[in-house]
Length: 304
Figure 1 (cartoon, helix red, strand yellow):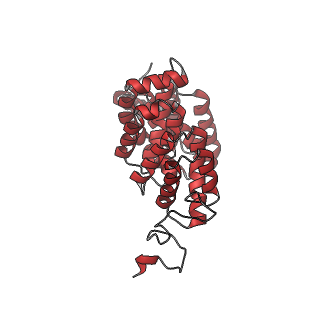
Figure 2 (cartoon, one colour):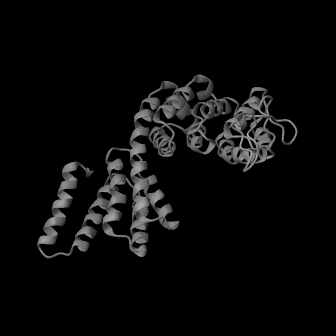
Figure 3 (cartoon, one colour):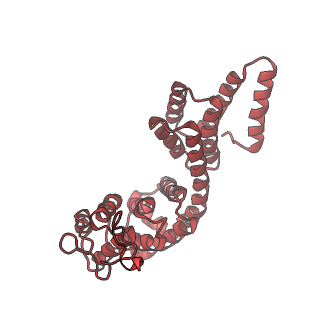
């Protein structure tokens, strides 16, 4: 296994300089460096087909080799640390497909690289919880620890890279390590719960969103139902003109009275925030100061 240490990076730079000195063009020298990085990445377990596709698309687009190096290097560095890295390449491929500028792709990759390292620092200790180990063995089978750990790091890094504080992710994991959740949830349920945090307003309302997701897990939401929550919350916001926090409060009230997950989702899609007739909202929220009433409309008490 090859390691992308600082010495290795310095060696690659030295190779570039030497190649230039002996008459090899800088472009060809950079291509040699790309070859070296790709080999290092695959030696450390990264998916070769995805790396090859990235290089092919980058070449077709006319991306400079130096910028391709800036994309592959962070991923190879994660792989060297035994951290998941293929999600960086997939994100880069997504950016290329959407026509995102090269510099912006590099910036996003660097942010996800940092978020992945931070995510590992909170996920790895959580994985040592005996209850978590039992849950993984029960739901995913023996020998699944590494796969679940990598998926959890990826989900957590997504949240962190989208402005969810590391402390919030750590607190979420701590709460999801309770017996009341681990005894009924699957690893996929918990991974999905972390992954949807950025999509239900957790950056703006971390405590509200975290409390709701924990309650949803305890209330029996599975991974498929959790995946539908962001769209349901968004639809409920549009129909009720309440902020996300208000929608989550109403959905929490439905959970408290034992409303099934499928029914809660349907209610949210229909704009039934409190679970009552269409357009109903939880008591005390009809004049919510944070309610978005649209341009030119009154903001209730906040307009005094």
